[in-house]
Length: 129
Image (tube, rainbow, N blue to C red):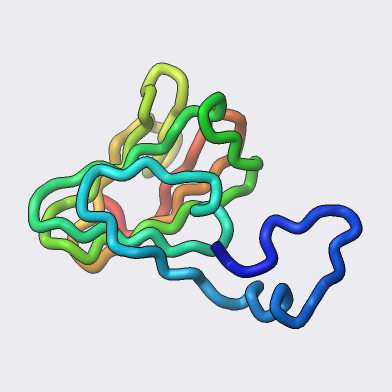
């Protein structure tokens, strides 16, 4: 998580917080299916790295309440495709290529941004198939 996030009323805006605004925190490689946590929503680069197919599953709002506007940035470093999907597809909607519910995939060295636009609705944009 980038240093200084999230801030609350009364926090003093320090140089460390300011400098954290312009940099990503590069998370450790995920080598198995991964469900992001709240800290992944603050300028974190989530690296997936597996030789075979792996899933990046977006949780329901009930389990992880990301604020609307949160962006989860996913990078596939591994040879296996990364499928971006919902933990609970009937509750959380993942949309890509327009208003179509989907499970987009990332090939090796491709990245995508998962953008929360409503309580349980995410748009996925980037180098997806």
